[in-house]
Length: 401
Image (tube, rainbow, N blue to C red):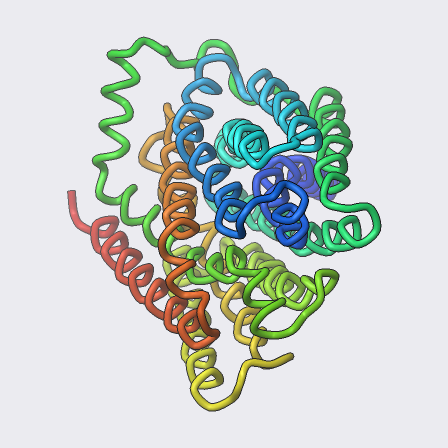
């Protein structure tokens, strides 16, 4: 009975934390099908519309450096409630935008507030659990988190088809308000006052320096970011990949996000089942074997067949399975060296990943989206670099001290 109760409680907190973590990705994927109409209605070029994504990712990355430190000082719950409320306001601003410059501003405001969910949810996991239970909870969050990006572009596509692009941001206002109410009623405070940290500049500067110069932390973050980048290039290129290369209509984004997120659910579920049965390092190795197989399969398909469905999206399912199998353990490895500053460390970790995503949106993706073959090479190259980072992290972690 006690064990079942614990599982129910864990599942409940996992759903709430996954919803918070998914806020950022949800606000990326939902409006992707609206790019052509936004360009038309706001008299903007496709590149200017693409910059609404780049600006969002950049502001997301910069602000994630601070969400965790603020949560270490004022508590997890208070910061979440303020950030989610401000995100709803920014979404309303996007709904009312009449020029592309207005949309840039409000997307930047969305980015500044959306990152609080993913940063603080990671810190809450480590506040509550250690070891295998932490890996299981992180895996549950990843599974549920995976559903949002799969559903988001489908919802966005249908809203775009029925009501136009403004309805997509109006939907974000309503869904964010519902999330705020759920957090207000259900989210516990997991950081007691006696464990809260200072916001003094000298203390923060020394702590940021300690975290951001820790080689094990940096290699673990690089591995997560590069692995995710091998898949995220398809998310950032979704309008071109699906609508241009594969001829999918604006309501057909599930062709990409369905297989991708199904893979994330499968991989995260497997990671949770393996927790406590095999070591986290072996789980990570298994994840890389699956991702490597997917990247090779993707290259072979693109070298031998023209772009088409379903074969152009099949490797993405396999890749995200391996990616989410390795991700929970790598994420926890990055936070483990800093038990007293988990929020700040989670901020740095998310900054690292979102900064790389912003760089990808601005530079890497436009260079790769010209063909499905160049995108396949991009996946393989990023995975190779991610595997190297994970190997270096493993060597440092096992090195005698």
